Length: 283
Image (cartoon, rainbow, N blue to C red; front, top):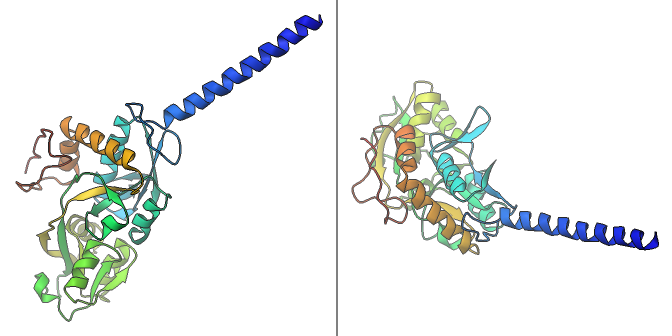
């Protein structure tokens, strides 16, 4: 009997060790890409993404769900990597430092790549291009960017639109989000808002109360990309590979046509690494 009891204790110990080993193995596998590479994620099997809630058609919340061109694209990228996307809303002014500080694995918010931002984060390959927009009221008489000198101009803090207004010596009024910027133009406390054109145009139509318009736009030189921590090259490389895959399989084109119907793609713009064939969206 004593021998049998000892045998049962040995079996129990071995079983516990086997179970623990299996659990560790499962956890570590969840933290890897489709190719089995460890991506250094905050949580096993999950891609934690910092984004905005108020910037349609790029990034926004609808019916309680994070969506928009950028967020649907990174969702498709995550699927290629066998990862579950987890979106968290934040302010754009804090997003890049939060990514590099480890609060998010990745930032998704139509982030234009600039040399200044490269000092804070690393970027994926570019997946979109953008325009600077000029939002104002129908009665303002403002029709071009060169009319902004001496006007009260609002921008979202930390954006390339903030950079533009600063470089043009417009002494901009900085606000934390796009709703606040639109609200100032709508209320007449600002003469104009330098916006991301697609966001500015959509918000003017949907929330501008019939008084706010997109008066002008001009093409930005730099591409938009996802932000990752400078220390996580493996995640950046995996995202780049998966991004090429969703470009090649037609997902990128489908999302462009869904969120930017009729928008022409500049002849010199190639999404991702530029090495994969893609179908140009219908203009």
